[in-house]
Image: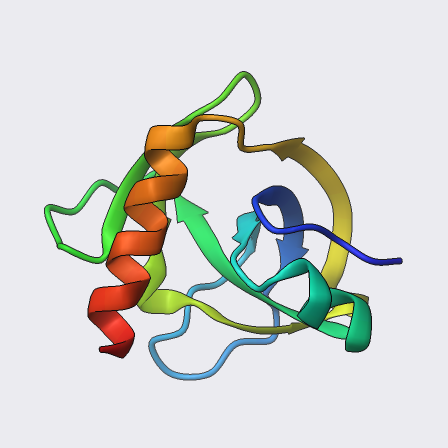
Length: 107
């Protein structure tokens, strides 16, 4: 199954290593639709309920998901880790903040 950018998926992170985020939690897809179609993986950032005042964290509030997008913990995800689709981010301001933060991270 192909997932789209800005979809919010429930992903199982266990087993984890070191300081990686753990548990089964919501994530937002940040890889492009083209990449997601060509690969059996996607790039996603976990959504956490722990609020940090870090430049790599972005607040998110949808009907089904509330917390912070942890762009500092983004990673490539195998499709076998995906439990289910939860929602799709529609807020354009949050999408813009994600794009701007990724540009800073990869500049």
